[in-house]
Image 1: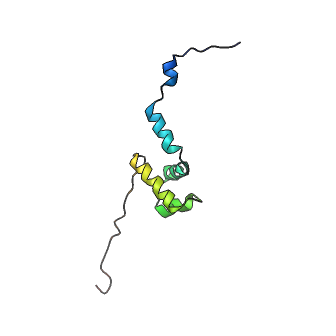
Image 2: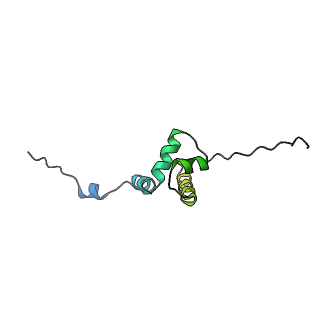
Image 3: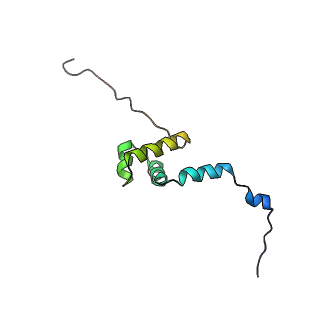
Length: 88
């Protein structure tokens, strides 16, 4: 028994712009593994590089920038506290 579904041609042609943007970003190479690591726990750049074998520093930096611009991650900058040395 065959079931026929009727859809308006406009409904079939229309694509949600939000869905398109999500797949354009998440469909890029390396994005999935990066997001998978960050969903588990926050990570430093070097930790991400080790957790995603084969990714170059440049590609990791590019993907992190894209994810940040899309609002999917937040970068927390460590200020690198300073204190006086024993001789100071």
